[in-house]
Image (cartoon, rainbow, N blue to C red; front, side):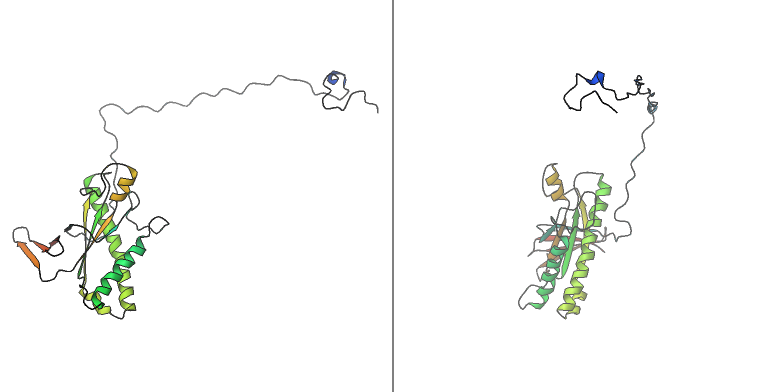
Length: 235
């Protein structure tokens, strides 16, 4: 067998004289044209769209009429958007903060000369997104999530201190303010994250306590003058 061409890669001038068999050249068929799908029909005028259904976040949770005002002792902040679950990631460690609060409460009953913490008030807050009713429910759900974890921490620390009797002397109440009391003004992502929080009030209620009872509304207003914290409790 003899070959009269060239194996050199750059020798393009002898391509026509090569003896290798070439396949027949056929025209390439263009891609078939497809018809676009039908456009969606617009909604007929005069008919309102479907209303968004909000899932109640505090379903099955206790509903309490509690309002705490003043400067909180602790702030459990930066809850995830539209969520009431506690965070335990590299940015926020809610359970670690709650354990510190429980330790302070139990130690106030053990340390000599310390003011005993008898009442804990938890107020849930949200950002400005969503209707008022839904934000009230979401704030209540966040406060109840903190209360559940706080109760677990209190039981554990009280058993470690061998003082389970302290648990029977504590009162924990939850309330909600929704989006009515923002901590950070503005609508930025950082401001909204700061407003998604739970304020923790630790009240001592020593002798300087004023109680006002409204018989018409069946509501008792308890104000601790020394702590400058007002608590509204429904009887």
